[in-house]
Image (cartoon, rainbow, N blue to C red; front, side, top):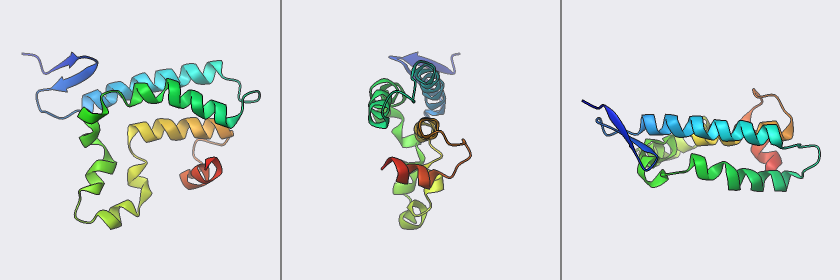
Length: 127
């Protein structure tokens, strides 16, 4: 018996969760991010242009099929939780989603900071 199958690029499992689909999209997004980092020279291109390239090349990969697997994301789980205000006041749970991790990784690389730099100053610097 098959435990999971891929239909139109989204992995469906017998359990009904989309963790495997999220894992697959994370791998594909990281692969695209590494290709973009390899081909992009941040010394020559502006931050705005680099962000537009990320939005055009990586975001569609990571966000593919989002209406289906979005319920697995922390931001959705936190927004429907009874203690929503308390949960959303702690952004570290929101930053645990794979698509946000890929975005933060790109932003830190773009700014030339260490990958262990706090996340809030990164968002403040980018705007």
